[in-house]
Length: 383
Ligand SMILES: Cc1ncc(COP(=O)(O)O)c(C=O)c1O
Image (cartoon, rainbow, N blue to C red):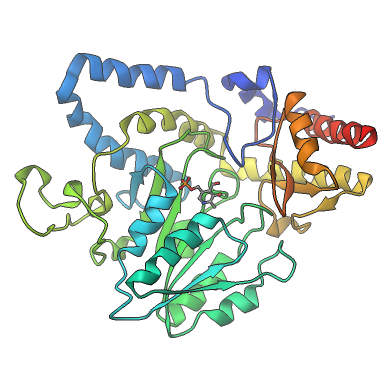
């Protein structure tokens, strides 16, 4: 057996010594460096007090730029916020559905926060269309493209679907949307850190995502990329004093937007999260998404082969090009089996209409993939 050089990273992730941790689609393992980063935050607060803001405010865009390097976003085009639900709503607030186009196209099988954020805009004149999937696993690209027409204001979709790990043909969606004058908001939460994402090559209007999953950055550090030429054109109705051109002038009345990405900032940032997220970004950069993707494909192929050998239903695309980092397997009693797995130290999760989601990352060994499938076999034999 050839040695896997990425396993050297295991020592940076304390939980791997105790658990078979295969849940990076939900919460990536914490890098050891986070202890020091959070202490650094506390020390800064303790010793500099209010003067610490002088470093904390620029840190927002600096952290954005760190994520930007992973998704090939130009410097100064990424803003950090607390969560993706807020970011979807913030982007939605840039559109005036009463004056212009009303239609918002989403995928039925997508993460509910996307549906909730955009259907909530129906009170502001939007009309959401949910495009169904024939098998609940794949995206019906033809149907999706057909739904994008000249009435469409926005297409709000995930780059990788949360249940099936299906990769969307984002290029085709963006091409179609732009051809009819619509904008695209791509949720890359299940993509960034495990498959290559290149906002420049895509030419996407808005990209959102967060750090808890494949980026191993922990909660509270979500990113919004706005295409460079769009930044000065957007006027988010969801706003606050840091979106102002001169926040510390405390000008009364309507917001006068900052000329740069800070116009999407709104209020005070979640500073500790900016500290804790950094170690994960640095490690992902050092390991390299190309190497992560190659290993992930090998391990998801292995999981599919082992699941097939047990006759499990696989709710994930079998085609490499369509599958991101997770293999979802289903069988009668899967939810209970998932609980049993967790009790036995195999950390995975269960989602309705997906089954058990198994998500190896660069720090997992092939032996761990084999072990979880063997444990599933034992649990099924006993029940
Ligand atoms: C595609 C996608 N978007 C968003 C989220 C989470 O959104 P938030 O940051 O608002 O919790 C998830 C989490 O599971 C997700 O899978």
